[in-house]
Amino acid sequence: MAAIYLIRHGQASFGKADYDQLSKKGAMQSQLLGKSWQSLPAPDHIFLGDLLRHEQTLENFSLGYQVSKPARVLHSGFNEFNHVEVLTRYDAQWKNFADKVAKTNKLPNANQVFQAEFSLAIKRWIGGAYDSDYIESWPQFKKRCITALQDVINQELMNAKRSNDICIFTSGGTISVLVQHILGLSDQNTLAIIQQLRNTGVTKLLFSKKNLSIDYFNNYSHLTQAGTDWVTFR
Image (cartoon, rainbow, N blue to C red; front, side, top):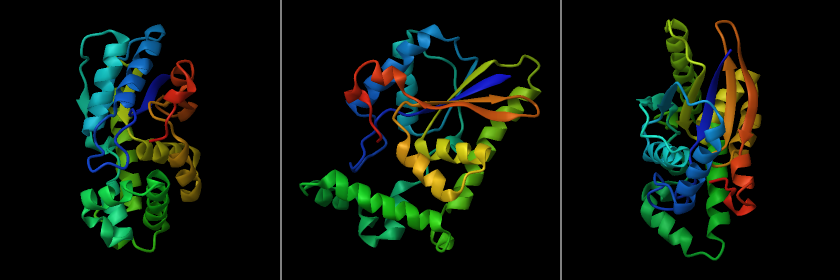
């Protein structure tokens, strides 16, 4: 069976006006992942979403792996959901995102406040009662992610020269939905998965013409080996 490694991006700028940018820690996390990959076979193919944090994670992974910039295929199906839209539909104050973030960051418990707001916004989005409010509803997001994975699998199955190892650089929401799809989880359990994924954590899938399964989930041993301070959720 061939393997697909779903790689969550490094720590981005959570709670900042421009989230789509790796922090310094996120760049180093990605390099640590690349360094740990030196004991594994080189990926035959690399796919990634077209967000900046996906590209930056791959670039820093390559630095750690000590290889030249590898060929890659962009696939917007692996992009994260639009967290600004999800927050705005929950509370219109988030419409001017930069201003709302700036005000929140002045609070002594800014991270906790932002996380509480974000969790409530996600629950509203997943709940199903307000699907028509969103440009991309939760069911539409799930369908997009699953279709993107199936695109990769179908492409590989039709290729005369089959790949053994495929890396996909993506985001936590996307990985959670794909795990849900494979295991048949409820939406509420999927929400719990989203909250547990670590930055640069790796989830390994195995696939063949007839089977798709999970070999392991959310492996971030490359971070714990470097020190627990490197382990982040966002």
